[in-house]
Amino acid sequence: MKRFVLTLVCILAMLGAQGWSLGNAQTTPASYFVQLRSGACDAPGDGIAQLDDVSFADSPPVGAAGAAQAAASYSIAPVSLDMLTGSPAALFVLDPVSHAAVACGEVGGVPGADGALSIGLRPVGDSGLSGIAYLAPNAANSGETGISTFLAVTGAAPAGVGSEPTTMSAAAYSSMVSSQLTILVGSLQRIDALFADPNPGDSVWTNQVRGELFLWQLLYRVAHEVSPPPAYEEFDRRYLEALSLLDSAAADIAQALTTNDESLLSSASTKIQDAVTMLRSLDTPAEAGTPTP
Image (cartoon, rainbow, N blue to C red; front, side, top):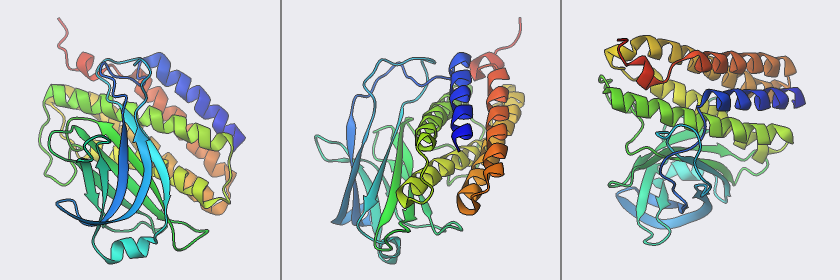
């Protein structure tokens, strides 16, 4: 696993050199409350659990000016996933001052093979905040649930999710790619930190890793459902090819966590490096869509 960490460090440096760095011209030095409540987003009930805040960094932005900011948190909720799905419940992201909801998602869906559940977090009103949450049973305590919450400043719900694909405008497509790459780099940084001190026997560590892997797979799924503007079709084909490698790498790492097969980590590392090399070879969406004089 240590070898895997070293490879990720190199990959992060490669992404930074390409200019797909974290950052945004607009900073969001804010923390948002995260709560589990009974009921639904439009009809909240009693509180179930207060989770760790999701905090955006207040450091100066770097890299692409149009990149979206993203943040994540991980919490252990003192309630089983069976209880959360056995009656109506929702995850709320709240403004720390007004306590008004800025994003929300009901707990429900089809569990994965590992029993985990992923839910979407829709923006509330014009908050411009959306995201996902990954809920996994705590193997060490069946009465608890590990919850990874991912939040991004996007201005809209993830494109293509829960709707028929429509052709995106050039500006919207470019914004989506910038947002996805911002989220991806942040996720790689968190994975790097997790594998710097690997503890596969710890359910908290494992759930955090699986949450990041799910995020890679979600990014691929969202991008795959998008219909790009005609000028971006070749860019989109190559971009999806890179994301598909990350999707496959996520599956390898997840299997390695179950089987302790380090060859799968080596396979995943190669796929990640190939994906980043492909991303580095791409023009930015704006450049790809600009006609050559």
